[in-house]
Amino acid sequence: MLVYMIYDKSSGEIVHMHRNVDIHGRSYTCTEEEIHRMIPPHIDRKSVGYISTELDQPPSGRQVKMSVDLTKNALIKTFIDKDAPIEKNE
Image (cartoon, rainbow, N blue to C red; front, side, top):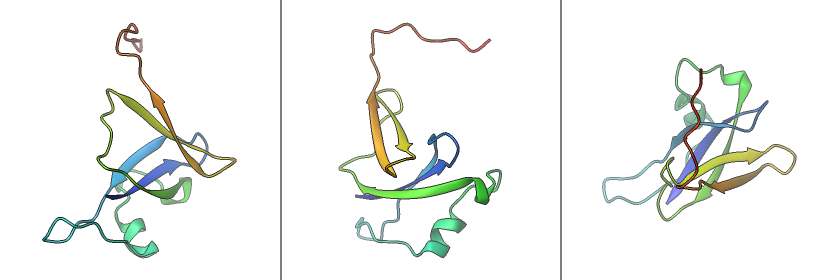
């Protein structure tokens, strides 16, 4: 499945994931204009970039943290240790 990931250009953090499927459930590609329209309105379009990748299934945020290596423009998957203590933002 083709997935588009919108990321923060300053940090590489994925801020939005999107996929397009037809009525038969098949993925299809987007134009750059369509990608810009899928960026949520609260996100500054100038501060983000996008990358696309083929995934069997988008990963759960509980299992994998996804980001973009800004120097290589490559997707990074960091597996989350399910036994690690949960960090609290105070």
